[in-house]
Amino acid sequence: MKTEDSNRESKLKSEFSSTSSEKKTNWIRFVKWLVYVLVIGSIAFTIWRGITEIRNSSISVQDFNWNWLPAVSLFYFCSISISWFYWHCVLIGLGQRPKLSHSFPAFIVGQLGKYFPGKALVVIIRTGIIAGPNVQPAVAATSVFIETLTYMAVGAGVACVLMIFFVDVGPWLILLGCGGILAAGLPIFPPVFRRIVRLSRLDKLSPKIGVAVANLKTRTAVLGWCLLPFSWLLVGLSLWSIIQLTGVGSVSLNELPRITACAALAIVVGFLSMMPGGLGVREVVLVALLGPLDPEVFTTATTLIVAVTLRLCWLSTELLMTLILKGFGCVPNARSKSINAGNEKQIQ
Image (tube, rainbow, N blue to C red):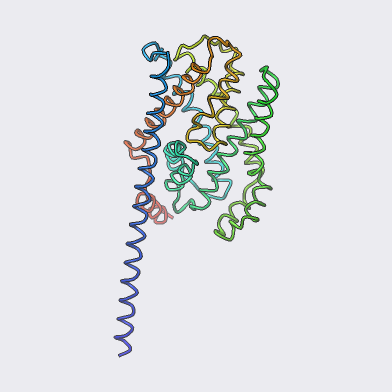
């Protein structure tokens, strides 16, 4: 009798476990499709708005010098590659063991999430791809915040240095840059970040976050401040190339400090505004910094075209890289990661 009861109980537990597992799988599938829809919708809106703004301008796309397009994309790709490498280093600094073949696709595909308001999809996409046996999901999400805020703090710092020593601008722009350094940089300075984690009780929510943050050293932040200025220089070169592409004005490379400061400050302010892709916010900074080059050429209308074209070219680069990575099967999924983990255990 007891044997029958125990068999019945184990059968009920098995059925309950199977039902729970099926529900969890359905929820995961639903969330994945929701993310796909949100990303595609955000990208479509960005493209539609960009094309509409170009059509409504006095500048014709037929007059664009498309020979500059490879340079725009190449500079941008090299820029985000440096950012990716720093993110990979942050993961290692948090005690994780990411693979380059996983972190690179996660970073590239995650770039598409920034076109959705709030930037939350960047964290979701990157974490979903990189998380696995060697990288804990909660720690992966934490690393995205650290890398992104470091990148923005360095961008604000680069803009401030260039505006103070190389570019003649109004004091309000310098103060805006200093505010960007504090807003983005202070929260992720390792001692401050560890305190924020304790005060917010994130380590209670996931003990692995507390352990990972305890491993975070100041040298990781120093690495970012040494490495990421080169990323911002490449962003400046990409903006300079897009000015040549649109043909709105003739700007020599001697103006690269102004162009780089302009790009860095515009992106940082756009990010802090939490608008999708910095829509509308970047243009204000671009007009303020590019206008003095030639007020008759870099008007609000022409500067808007530069900003819109740059956004569309960067988006095209991200989409192309995502399609290439997907086409070659370089974007890992849960099944492939679990198979690799099993193979590694067998080897060990």
